[in-house]
Image (cartoon, rainbow, N blue to C red):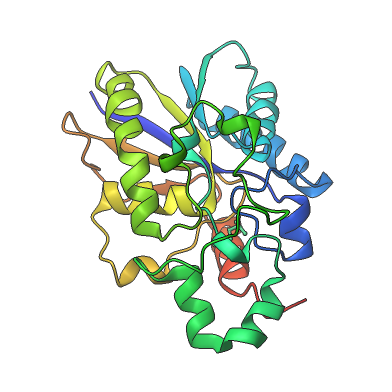
Length: 249
Ligand SMILES: O=C(O)[C@H](O)COP(=O)(O)O
């Protein structure tokens, strides 16, 4: 039996709209983001895909998106688990900074390296920064050495995979339809893991907000076909807009 995994990047957040690097800062959905989340639920309902279990990060924008989407799809009853391992990439010292200012400061090459290179993280964030998570109660249960101060995509994949293997993959193997609502870069990491996309190609790959991306997987959790968006046109436009961030203030 083909197994179904649906990934949704949270709807647009208040900081997406201000064009700020967000990472682990816990900002909320914007009004547009709430509409995108409900639309994701509508797309799910229309597709006939019925998630049995939900996994989210510990960040509010993913949790709000999942709630609004499941409400619209009339599946608020399903089980849910949250993990910091699905959080957005920790953006280090870039958290709270404007993307256009960063592009101006670093130049296009280093800006893209920090945003999209596979294994080069941005500079670390200081513990006393307003945008640090060093004393954030959400992560009080973590060993302090596990709490990132910056991350590359590679480091995101490294911390995400244990949760993929221990929890998400286990549910898929039992033929559960799984919904994961997370973030641009944690989902890029999962996409890379599932498709085997190269370190180079992943630098050009962007995930739009609020559009369900469906994987159909075999018994070994390998894709049986190209993953597909439930609204491909909107997804292409959304991915192009993500790629262009930094061009505008
Ligand atoms: O953390 C952020 O700023 C965004 O959610 C993802 O940003 P990016 O597309 O610049 O990686």
